[in-house]
Image (tube, rainbow, N blue to C red; front, top):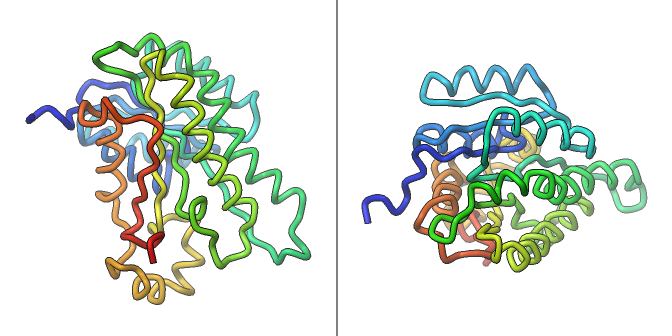
Length: 255
């Protein structure tokens, strides 16, 4: 029982790992003893965080733009040069776009869909060889997709592509879970509520107190909250769990 949540020695990749929820998960993994690769579009931020987290364990920066298949292929090729296998993939890279419905732009829609939905599918596809090499019947490989409660309950904000992409991410998780279970790869999703991320900064600056007051737990998420769910989904504790979507929102989706 003491080893149920142990991920020490596992090799993990966290996309969008340089800030926000990705940084929180990467930090949790590093402190739990995993060898963690982080990827993000902005190389400087990615490199700086990897250097900082390496003071606590092992963290390596692999900056790539995952909004395009060429960047995804570059990431997969670079990781394959460094590692014979991959135990844990966290598809966290994401984007948001908000505009009134009458002005909502095609470019904003396409940007969000490319990063939030197309990206996780092709990152998974290109990394399947490494995930399959790590996977065994007793110790499956893990894919964790970061969805959102906005993919479960429509938000009040006019972020149409974001909510649609996250709902798509949830269905993609379920579809992949059924397809990859036979390969000993488990696929699950986390649906976060409000966390102190760059994406949420403007919303929290404006509506932060109201969001806290309206949350059943009367607060927003902390790094430990999201890292704890990710570690559960990466460890022996969840070896019989696949296709699940776990809200991490303080009960906000149930109000």
